[in-house]
Image: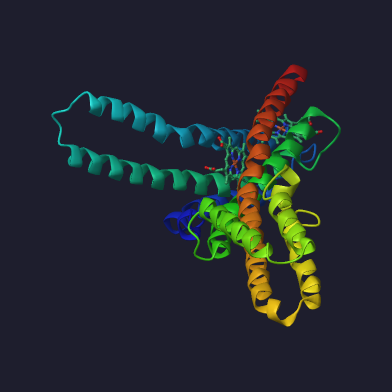
Length: 308
Ligand code: HEM
Ligand code: HEM
């Protein structure tokens, strides 16, 4: 997902629409002088409330729209499979262009989702007339804000993480290739360490057996293992190397370089896990909380009409 196709989609189309809506709402709010003061029940309050609710419906439909291409593709594939007389390359070409078109449309939806979601902050706040309390109405508002803030983080992550991930991998193609390289370095270090004292062998073995990549939620998000055995091994080898005889130094240097290289690759692997976790974790807040928000919003509307 690129900055120029998401935030700048169709020459900032949704940014312009959302800005226009927001500015008009602020102006209307400033010029309107309701007898009872600004609140959700004035005519302008109702207008802002209904507009906000409509936007929320469209934002929620994004989840459905997101899954639509794969559903339709599956249906098309099964239809195509039942007409074998069709030219296969021709069919593939049309499917590819259809998918490209829907990919672009989905970006349009996400662009609209982003800007209209942010415009909601202004519209819904003006709707409330800044009247908050410990009630279901304010609960709906608070949930909405959490959903919007998590969404803003999501967009930031989508735009920033992929670039950081590519830079971090430093030319290694996949995470699995990185793990294989670390494993290979472990094997080389184990073999090399055999010619040295038990202390050195133990340090290398511990680094091989106890170094963790990934792990629990906190470790994934922070890319850290406290007292990382590999980092510790590199420090210890630096000290242990000082007591070696001259003729062992060349071989020891090789071992040290292997372990130092492993330390770099382990750091890269942990960062890769961290970037992926940061790309995903917020959606575990965003999607369920948007349902919680929707429920609170329905409760708010029902409560309004119940007391009315
Ligand atoms: C995103 C959508 C919405 C949010 C976040 C929201 C939130 C709020 C909040 C926080 C208040 C102030 C409550 C208070 O005075 O303590 C309020 C008031 C009100 N809302 Fe909404 N609202 C939304 C949509 C709607 C819709 C669609 C309607 C009507 C169809 C509506 C009707 C009202 C009314 C009538 C009040 C005034 C209640 C009163 O002061 O007695 N709201 N809303
Ligand atoms: C009250 C406002 C919002 C609601 C109700 C809402 C709702 C949703 C829903 C239902 C999904 C689909 C989740 C899924 O099925 O995986 C979604 C995805 C998403 N939303 Fe929101 N959202 C809101 C505001 C925002 C805002 C303000 C932003 C950004 C500034 C945002 C960014 C995103 C992103 C990046 C995704 C994931 C896109 C993807 O993975 O395809 N959302 N949102």
